[in-house]
Length: 290
Image 1 (cartoon, rainbow, N blue to C red):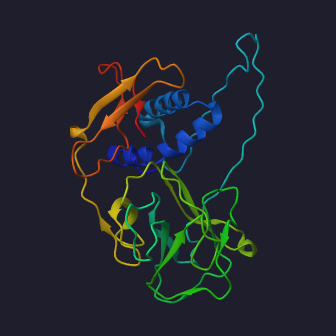
Image 2: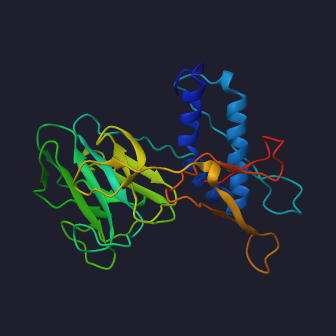
Image 3: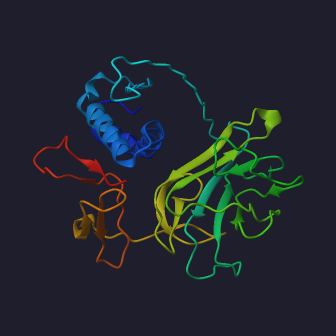
């Protein structure tokens, strides 16, 4: 965590973990609306208790619920699993550099309109990729494995297709990337511990754009123009102030209530950190958009 006197830095770090909180909350309660309420409450409490945080520590929050509404007691069993993430571990200078998670409407350089992942070697020396692996599931680290003898020259980029309709190969992972949001993990070799070398968790993606590090290999993840195998170029973004509530359903015959947002501008708008509320005067009564 950044120094607590840096409120803007604390806000950036807190917003960065919102997708992780939402994924955990949805797995915990099984309902998107309740999960968003839980995440919103967590973020509000974290912000209101900023002065209590100490750099380098972690906060563990636990929510306990009765299994049934007619139960008079609460039975609680806790199972805590810790996952330690390593970024490059010093000896593997390979990172995720750009992804296209929503199938493009136009074919890119390969002649196929499919998802893809770009990696970059940040070192000046060639790196051996043999036995490293890629996956969109933390529980299945060996979903696609780099073949023996795979090397990447210093400073070079490697583009891999993610086409589930084609068999796996040296250039195709054979698993697609979820356009509605998901994750990409780069794993070390099992004989080296199999740690996560790099990872990206992302939300819903617009068509014909990518997520990319800007600058390449070291920068923050930004919405970008597709440049597989070339220098990353950030996309121009529209203003959130132009967004409009376009349609809503309060009492559907089936399913949950919903709200439709509309962006009238030609450029995409980042929704991260925006919120919806039925009570604009109460900052605690807000539901995160993403």
